Amino acid sequence: MIRRRRLFTGVVVTASAGLALAGWGVLEGRAESQAFEPMNGSFRSVARRTTGTVRVVRAQNGERRLILKEFSTRYAPELYLYLVEPNADDDSDGTNLGLLRETYGNQEYAIPGDVKLTADSKIVVWCDACQVLHGQATLSPS
Image (cartoon, rainbow, N blue to C red; front, top):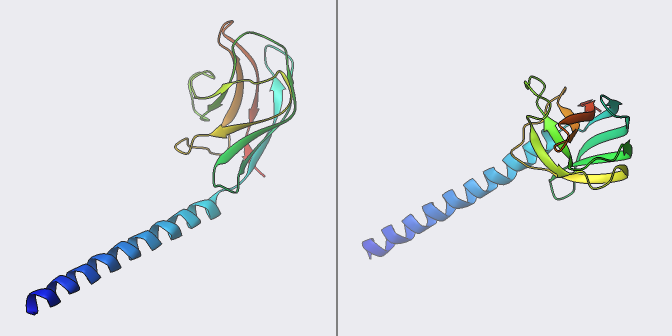
């Protein structure tokens, strides 16, 4: 009888701890999503005419999204979008967000969850084939 009571107590304590930790994760995730601040910027040309705006938002599923609006740049092979830290040594030394889908128009890209995003981070349009920086936008809080 005593053995069963100890076993039952152990199960209750373990279950309570698990529920408490699960609740903590929910609260922690909620605090993280509340701490997110949308950011935006405008593209400026560097080596090639590049225009449009960029906005970073959090989608309903919690994922951060990079939105290009009225975007335009000159066609080149292997155009990539990079997210670059403010103090990076090289504009092509950042997180590759993928191939540019189009050289014009509205577009959306996912930002990996482990990527640090701060004010003054840059969104860079880089041609890997030509090693040319087409344009960039510096982010600032909305």
